[in-house]
Image 1 (cartoon, one colour):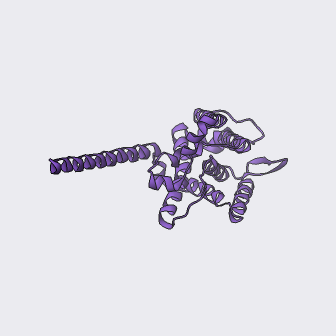
Image 2 (cartoon, one colour):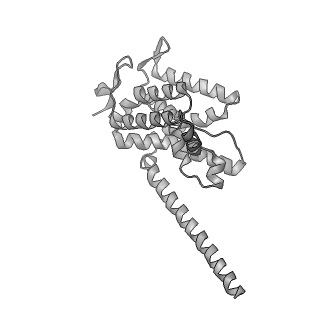
Amino acid sequence: MGFSSRSYTRSYLAVPGLPRGIKWLLIANVAMFLLHLFAVFQPILFELALNPLQVISRFTIWQPLTYSFVHFEFWEILWNMLTLWMFGSDIEQGWGTSRFLKFYLFCATGPAVLAVLLTAIFGIAGPPLMGAWAPIYGILLVCAILWPDRQVLFIIFPMQMKYFVLLVGAIALYFSLAGGTANLFLLSGMAFAYLFMKMPRIRAYDPLSAVNRAYKSWKLARAKRKFQVYLKKQGRSRDIN
């Protein structure tokens, strides 16, 4: 059934539902935020944030995914989770949970991998990146494409969805040009959302499988290094004897 023939064209003055994928994303993000309130967990959370130099030097391959679940600021997680619920619910209900989660993870990991590649090529380094901004921007773009004329509230002013997303993107771009390069990186979530919608092969992308393959490759490489070290030690022992 098409989007236009169902309740997905409703105004955002109505209350959205809570589909399964959105529910578990909310639980995961809020749980991680609550952990940061305890000092003992904060070093662990910093290890989950995205530090491209660490990904390259220490092969912390989990960071391009886990960074999007790490929030330290209350207003940041409040905005991100409200946006995820209010705007992401209709996408999941229309696409199904599996496709929506692939889309969400693609918009999260895509900009992170891009940041790692830019760091590897140009040596660009900045502060650790965290927060669900990239997939949230991706969700907003999809909503603007699917329902451009839907009425939403910006503070107290009603406006069409396409203009709301344009305004949000312009604000993020302004802060990026003002020196907040992290905003530019996170804003690229919109570009990856567009790629996901327009390229069928990308919709078949499975980031969890990609992470699993990378983890197995890392384990294999580590095992090879350990075996090489063992052989060298055995060789030195025979030389001494």
